[in-house]
Image (cartoon, rainbow, N blue to C red; front, side, top):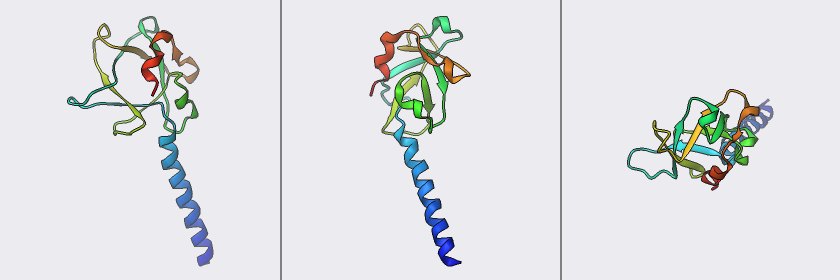
Amino acid sequence: MLCFFEKFLVCFLLVFLCNILGQSLYAQMVHPVAAGEQPKFTVAIVPHESYADLKVYRADSTDENLKKNIGYWFITASKDSKAIPINWISDPITADLKIVLVTYPERAGWINKSKKSLLKQ
């Protein structure tokens, strides 16, 4: 009985560690910076696709499309070395990147491909 419990515990710990590590392996993460920190660029949410540079689908951290720079974002509140530091602003005119949030993953993608380099790490 104890041997079964030990195997179960080892398997559980392996799955848990793989999930933790897996979250940081998918690199298209962004995190908002605090007031004193330096963002890589500024982002504004616009009301319609016609004003946007990028259509963003908010994915969970395990989505394998996060690393492809196709508009799948995992927005994290914590600092992560793989997360891109951004600053949310309300004025789209002064923003480096204008995004619109989409509900379905197949709608995500670049409208203005010249801005794609902002999300390269």
